[in-house]
Image (cartoon, rainbow, N blue to C red; front, side):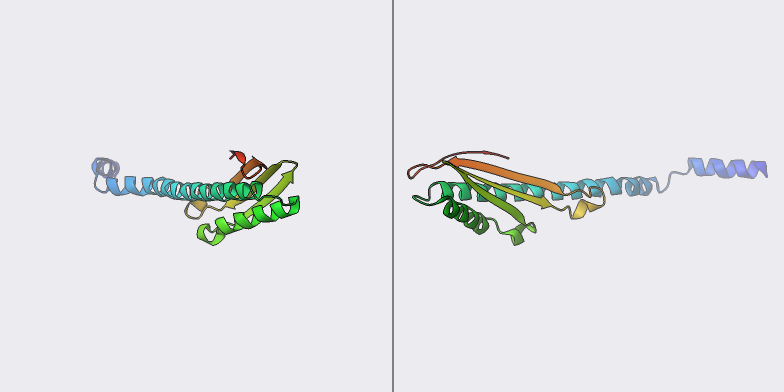
Length: 147
């Protein structure tokens, strides 16, 4: 009896058939998780770039709007942002805010990009905040921004 158990254990130890399948099965979960994270991160970066372009266009439009009141400049900035950032294209809705303080226009937009593929591994949303300001000038503006 002892000898048959030893032979069986020895036979299992020496048998290497199917080990690649086990290794692949163990590595598939983190591999697909990393692929999912890279796709979701790329989606967040794409959203950030589109938001940056929309915020830049909004602040420049409001700063170069000519002889307008603060309220009109804020309305122009929000309208230009909404025209340039299409939420349905990214599956993300942004929250833009425009402020006019003296001779400066500041447009800030925030958004949360929810992970889709990598939700199992990374269940936190990607937070995006873009802010740009420009000086109101006579027909021109100088812009400065931060991400």
